[in-house]
Length: 104
Image (cartoon, rainbow, N blue to C red; front, side, top):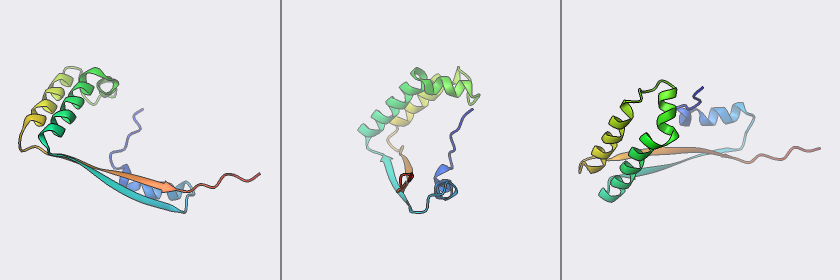
């Protein structure tokens, strides 16, 4: 069973409250890849992961893609990395909470 949720960030605070946490801070951070060297590093890294790590195996196993599509995805990462007008960015969301230890 795949347990990832691409919309998790928007639900994070609510999930914390559902878990009984009350003193919760939500923080964000963003990463941007627009510099040619950074893009090449990022693109080559993801191209390699796509075909040579459990990422690709899991994608096929979950039915997200066919095995033959992994090479195409890796090639797309490399094309993106070499495109002078490409940019990639994403936002990290985290929830920070203080949890008091249980008292005997």
